[in-house]
Image (tube, rainbow, N blue to C red; front, side, top):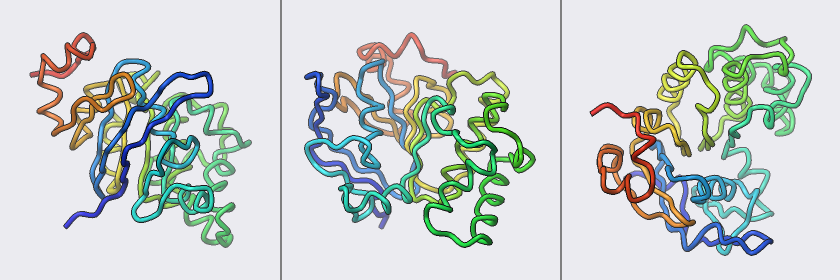
Length: 242
């Protein structure tokens, strides 16, 4: 029987200014599956993602496997859950690609040989080993996206969380990203307005609106439900061929 990679039970969150961002979220994500989160701007997708490694803390702890996301567990949780932000410039802050990708293993206390192996393995997986000595800030957007993914993969996480991974990518690099995501055999959670990417990478899809999960099901069942997509202002952005 499949195990739960993520368990969320009755999670609510209100920002300090009083904005209610999440309302009683209940969601189980299974080991090895890819879950898509869709919804219009302000639906709560990014806020929900930020609860998965403790950047935000709501009304009830999220569980990663059997481990609750609480302050005492943050170092272990953040090695298990890799967060990839929409803007790769928020992820890459070191002088070179090597420095960025090695940052996680170094802080986990890996040996020099383990660090070297982790960096090479991660960059090879995203087809970016040739960028090893390049300054991160000189890379193209597509290259930055790949290296951002490598910074997470170098820590061998159980779960990766991606917020709008295809934003600002040209068609070639977007297709390469989709193909890359489909090669990664681990639990993935993808929040995106790119419904074609969601269709081509996700096993299930959850629709969010006003901080709630309004529908969840198999990808085709959700994405070809015109009434559902229209209700939540998603039909106009659909790019999925019938």
